[in-house]
Length: 311
Image (cartoon, rainbow, N blue to C red; front, top):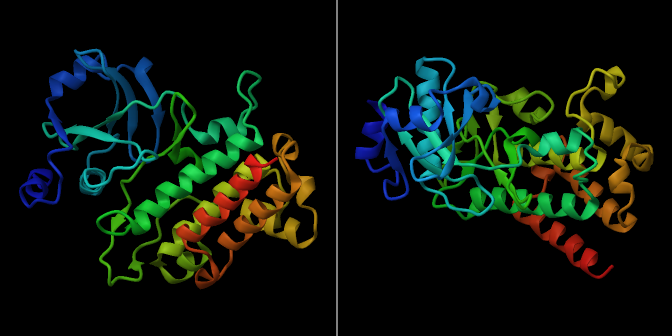
């Protein structure tokens, strides 16, 4: 099997990855009971499970059995077995007995960032301080992927539904099925366009070349979601503003930023919000070369954090 070949070739860090048997995971998820479903996505369905020792896990099972899905799942094992960061979801192991490997992750209890941005909740309000902290955590994880992991990694599907929140509402980036390890000499990937509408780098759409700055563009859209509480694509907005990135950039150009900010954000310090908004604008520059690196985004957000401490 392909994954076994990858393991024997040394591409998977076997010390970090446990190999589960299928019976263990069937028992843990009550035979993949529909009541255990945590979420469904392009890659498959994620189930909540409990191992015999009481440990709570999340198990990803492919909805389709084809070569592309097998490749995606193997890719995720290879990448996640080699990285370790507090703001990246941990892969605990996999099961090789099924046609498409089952992937086993740490369980992240509070769902997606997208849910809390787009669904008002009385018991949990995403205030400015929390949005700023979550943004910093996400960017630190992406900066690690781009420059601190053993090889540079392009995530390739940064969006608010791929950012999970743990029991303390700390951000954890998930879903590495389409991510790619890059050699130090590589400047881009030439691929068929893949990703999520509203988050895709326009330069990548035109050239089919995915660069480190394409992740920066997608991050920019997430930053705007945090600012506005609005979705990346919306049919409610006028045609030219259906893309949140375009809607935001037009609002910035026309000095109407305050009109589109989320009510929770408006309660924060205006100076911090303006720096954050201008940073998001830089990330959304149509020319990749003009966008900041993830390291530069981290540094700018740290400045806002220091300002926030002093207020």
